[in-house]
Length: 141
Image 1 (cartoon, rainbow, N blue to C red):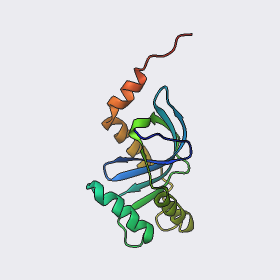
Image 2 (cartoon, rainbow, N blue to C red):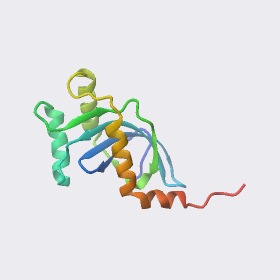
Image 3 (cartoon, one colour):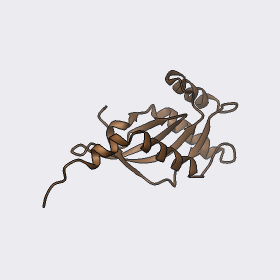
């Protein structure tokens, strides 16, 4: 796990999607990251090297890209194990967000259903990471 700092742009990958989020706070003692979702990108390739290439290509020109973008400005925050997050290339995230804001009729989707599906599927796939956090000893008063 890289050292995560507040305000860094992070991402989670699962299936054909990448969820970008801003780190709000990191609790080192519990290994948790409070993150604010910003953008969900769907339609990525299964090949890890091709994922970043597809995002970089979409940043240059989203026209003709198979990617679907979802604005997560109304999505709830996540408090998840920090080990699950990766540090993102923030220029990619911000470029795609700017595109959504400037072209709201094109790819912008304020529907939270894809976000909810991503979160529940990710959680089921990584259940052991969440169990280890909930099993952490709590301090006695």
